[in-house]
Length: 346
Length: 257
Ligand code: SF4
Ligand code: SF4
Image 1 (cartoon, each protein chain N blue to C red):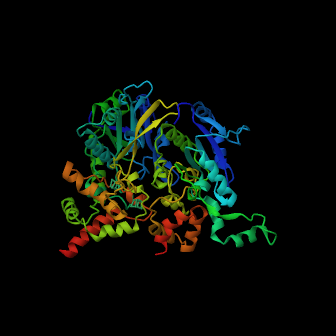
Image 2 (cartoon, rainbow over the protein chains, first blue to last red):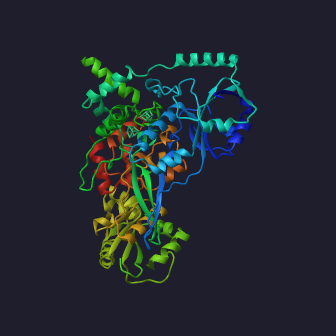
Image 3 (cartoon, chains in turn green, red):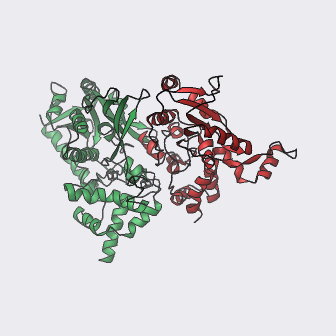
């Protein structure tokens, strides 16, 4: 089966069957926001949510991740931690799935990252299609991530009283096998689905003032733009924009040794280009001083460097950086600012 | 470090001894620690008093001539000096004393009686008198960080105090930013390392660990002004914990622009 239908009233039992495969993490309400967390019952989740504070990245590239354990006395060579448990990410937005696809590119690059890849093998991703904008901060249409393009095992689309179940992998197939209550998509529901998608497509419009090739071009020419100076003046350097980004993958490596001074653990911890000492080296030299150049770097990592290197935009348009910025620095305004500037000059 | 267990001594000056209490409260970890170090002086947990030690842990700020002399004397015997808690690392709340002249402060505290503390001096952090090897910031200190510093001392490596703001930890803990609740928080300009202790419980960061090296005081001011705070009110927020010499220099150069 490629496309199935499940009634919303059957979601509880389907969800319970998923738990047999492993822990399930899904979006949950937290005060005025949402976070991914461990879910025990379907009703604990809020499937109609705006992007969570941290992306589901915290499960496949944890803020602090053990790489290996070592022993000093007597010395024992360490092996990478590669044994991970199966788990399911439930209700992942299409933009966050695009974020996972970016990570796949990074960690598959030679030399491939054993921790990431072994963990990734154990993840089952059940996505949920967005039918309308989360809020005005999202720029997903500009990069096309409001439409799913693989990277998941199952995708759910809300059809009112039921969900459309798009099965996209063997793992996904496995999760619906033998479930009598998931039936094959019929012609009538197919029409309903087409209608819903037609409505959806009317709602999403490129949020930038130009198409991506032109955006990429203004980045090429806008390295010395006053836009960066302005952004740098307003930025407080809190690092939040990098902390919440689903495609930021920089990390630092640290060793912790226990008080017996022999048993230790090497971990990688998230590290951000917005940190003051991120580009400072042993001699004290700082290769990227100042908040303006640091912000510029962040944007260039999303719209230029990754395009040159991987032919891929590393912004998923999730809007988290804008949503979290206390200085109200907006990705949409910054990119459009560059475009305006070029056109003004042009 | 010598082959035998290094000896550690705790001494206190002008403070509330709350940071030592944090150490005393470490429970099992403290017992673990005593397997690798000898604690020879720590009046909150023991009555014996050793005279010789390798690692000197100093809590409290220096606020009199007598304190200063005593600190120099105990420091001379130590191989490693650790500043424990805000009072020792930056002067902490004791810096509030320096906001007015000594005479004025004495008068407001003791009235017009004969000066009961004739050798009082303006508050100083201990590194204004002796060289400090390890800093454990905070009011009070964060227990896990104390253990981390002990580990570094035992391994003979430096401890790098985080130079990034509390927001880093706060975001990783997925707290709702308190600014979104309409509160004012010093997290964006305060050194991390406490695992965003206060915001985790819904409170605002009060800056007890001192300012990061390059606080964007001006940008922070813009933000606070948006929330209706005046420059004076902002400076007052900074002054509870960040009125020490070094911290003042960090924000005044930018904020007064
Ligand atoms: S740059 Fe901003 S909008 Fe783009 S993926 Fe990162 S957090 Fe989302
Ligand atoms: S979230 Fe905003 S203020 Fe914080 S570092 Fe990013 S751009 Fe600067």
